[in-house]
Length: 65
Image (cartoon, rainbow, N blue to C red; front, side, top):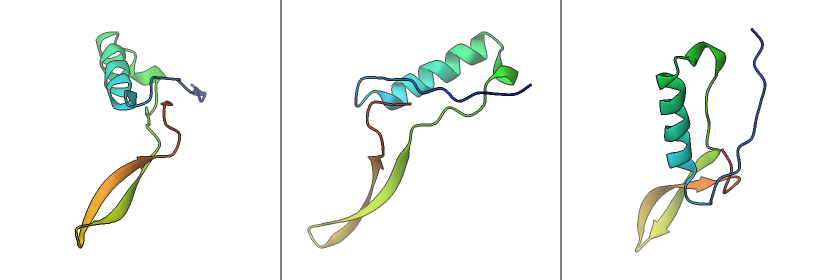
């Protein structure tokens, strides 16, 4: 079966919780074969804080899953 792309708009800052809720709902409905990956578009960035490197995540499109 062919899968399609969809974009879900969510409140900014709640992307991970929306992702977890979708995955849980798909699992409970036993529809895993009809869904692919559910992604939150992020990248890891290295920042300098107080002279030390800190790795954090930055969202490409805040508010979208």
